[in-house]
Amino acid sequence: MDYGIAGRVAIVSGGSRGIGRAIATTFAHEGAKVVIASRTQSNLEETLAELEEIAPGRVHGIAASMTDPESVKRVVAESRDRFGPISIAISNVIGHVIDAAKEGSGPGAGTFQGMEAESYREEFTQLLVSSWALARECVPDMKDQGWGRICNIGSGVAREPSTHLPHLLPNVVRPPVAGMHRLMAARLASDGITVNNILTGSILTERNRSYWVWLAKERNITVAEATQDMTDRIPLGRFGEPSEMAALVAFLCSDQARMVTGQSIPVGGGGSLHL
Amino acid sequence: MDLQLKGRLVSVIGADQGTQAACRRVLEGEGAVIAAAPSELSYPLADIVIAVGGVRPGSDLLEVSDPDDLYAAWDDMTDAVSAYRAALPRMLENKWGRFVWVGSAQAKSVDAEADELAAMTSLGMLGLNKVITGEVGSNGITANAVLRGGIATDEDVANAVTFLCSEGAAYLSGITITVDGGIGSGIF
Image (cartoon, rainbow over all chains, first blue to last red; front, side, top):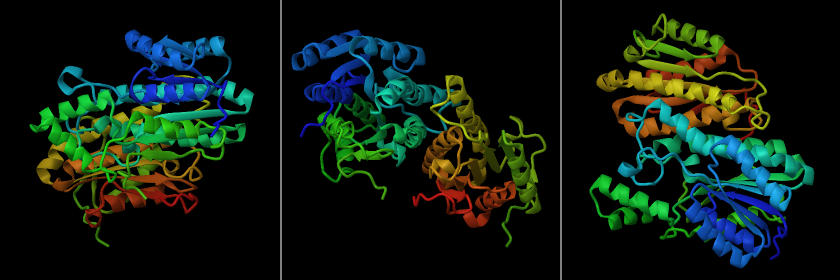
């Protein structure tokens, strides 16, 4: 199927690894002009080289932190200068890591009893302010074109906080992020702009693997046991691949999905419990 | 109905004075004791902490131009966290406690209210309530929310808050009661 996004300019934050890289790759295959932003120059170069083979001359990388609104502004301006007005914005920023040495580089851990109020603010910056800033900078271009796609890579805990894990910060900040996108969808629908949110379930990324290593240590079990415990919660009986996230994101960003907006959609192998 | 609130110590915090005053009045009518000046001194003694989110009628997330406005709304949430955490040790000791957040019904239905910043903040509190419930719920501590919408009065809101504080609401935690006169059309 032709998704109708050839020639469209797409920005993917966190685009050099994991889910972001899979999305950027799919967009490249669909003929879009793809800008990836990432904090780490080495990851960026490696992924760009890969993308360049798929889409010569249609990819661009920018080293930037997408949690700082000023830096988001710079990324959007540079993307526009390079390829033209932005049509697709994918926000894919990870949560605040409180103590990487202690906790692995996985999702922000912590408990209500142990977490200082200040950490809630940092997570808010990572997850909410970042996606707000990206949408805000891209919306004027989308309005001019009468066409736009905003998609946030969120988490299943937005709808069902994970209380079996020490997972306080995502549990608290993912719901507002999902809600913000729902509210933006209502504001932007009449401009031909759709806004959706992915409720990520258990996807196999390097980051998730490091989280399980941390969790296993924390619970004094083996990594295999920790992984099995997570797998047992997934009706499909396996973890998802980043490409399986990218498949839904590409559809939501297609011309065909023009009537789908304001949705939070789980990609979790049937693991979500909400009706 | 005896709500069994006699002698319970209540701290009410937040930005919206009218709603706070109504909560104090209704709870006092049920025999609860209201902390005269809610402060860092009173939180550690409270059996009940009620946090009232700020009201920013007509706020629009896409119209916000300064990220500081986002943080200002979010601070309502982190202020509640600080008060809740200060109250928690005594609640754990007593095996009894009530946390109630008062926020916007737009958190659950786009048409229930028009206050996007308050909706955003409230969604954070709904997540937090689930976490609190999972962590300390077995100690007789509940964490819930009242979401106001439509043309609900301060009194309407305070009545729902008071119910959630009562003994009869002991098995309700991590839930929301929407007080919006039925205007919100979201089912869930």
